[in-house]
Length: 79
Image (cartoon, rainbow, N blue to C red; front, side):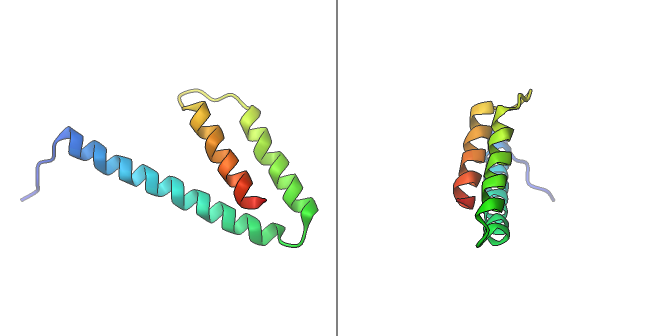
């Protein structure tokens, strides 16, 4: 028999999943980026410029400030 969960419990579980996905994606991209750019400052600079360009785009249906914070975190991971 399945357990009936409240809306609050389901939201709490979704919040954990979203946070986990965000952290995983940030860590994975930063790790791959560091390997790709290791010893090649030109590639690192180009990647940072591309990431910065993401911040200049407009998006609908998202928290733009939060998006930009994630991009900044990725830039820090590459640097």
